Length: 397
Image: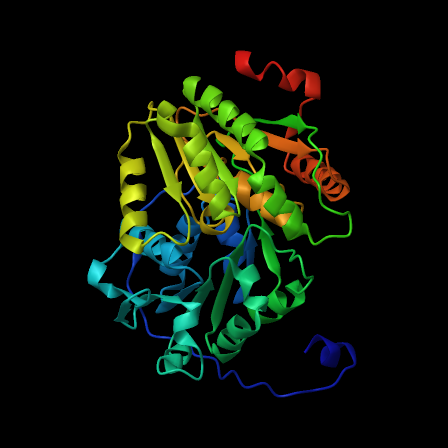
C-alpha cells in the first residue's frame, strides 16, 4: 500500500479479516505507568509486537488489551506450562465467568469461542481443529519469536483476525529468521524497559575453572559439554558454591541443558540442601506439578535451590523470589542468556538485587569464546561483571 501511494497509483481495498464477536470482559487489575504507555502504543495499530523484558508483565498487559479490544480472542502458546499460566492469569485479571476461558491442547480440548488459549501444535491448519484459527477477531502470540519455525509459521498464516499482537523478550533469533515474525505479527510497536520496581543491583560473579577439557578444538560443542558434565571435580566446585548461596538464605536457580548433569549436581548436594527441587522435561507431568506446588508452598523467607534444564524453565517459569542464578553449563547466545537471567528479574517485595554465578571454563578455546559473548550479553542487560578477585569475596557477600 505504501508503495502504491508513493507512486500515486489508485487502488481499491477490501478488508476480509475477521472482526470477531463482541466479548464483555473488563480488566480487573492495575497497570503500572509503563504498562499503560505500552497499551496506548499497541492500541494505535491493528497488528504489532510488544518487545518487553522478562518480568515486565506482558501477560497482564495483554489481558488489558483483551478488555480494550473487546472481541473474542485466541492466545497461542508453544508449551503446556504457558497454557496453564495464561489460564490462571486471565482468571485473575479479567472480570468474566471463568467458564468463558477455554483451552485447546495439553490434554484439554474445550474451546469457548470467547477467550481461548491454544497450543500452536494443537491448531495446525491441516488438523481437525485448524478451522478455529479463522473465528477470532483478536489473536495474541506469546513468545512470538518461535513463529519462525515452519510448523508454527503455517498456523499464523492461517490466522484471519483483524487484531494480532505478538509478545516477546527476544525478537532477534539466533538463525536470523525474525523477518518471518514481523511478517506474521507486524512490526515492533513498543519497546519496554525494565520496571523501576525490578531489582536494581545486577551482578555477575565469574568463577574461573582451569581444568583442561580433553576434547579437540574442532570437536562438536556437545562433545565439550559432555566432558564438562562428567567432570566430578567441576561438579563438586559448583555444588559447594550452591551450598554457600543456600546457607546465605538465597533462592537459587541452577541451570544446565543436560539431565545427567542435573542428577550429578543433585547427588553432590545430597542432604545439605533440604529445600531442593528438580525440574526437567523427562519428569512425568504429575511429578513435575508436585515439585512446582511444593516450591510455591515455601514461605517467602525460606531459602531454596531449584535444579532445572534451561529448556524447561527458560521461558514462562514464574517464581518471583529467585535471586541467584548458577549457570552450571556454558551458553553463548544473548537471547538465551536474556531468557535465563530473566527468571531472576521478577518483582518481589524482598528482592533488591540479583546475582549470577558464571563458570568460566578456561580449558578449551570454544568455552573461552562463549564467555566473551556472555560478557557482552550481561553488559547489554545492565549487569556489572565483577573482576575475578572480587568473585573470591562471594562467601562474605
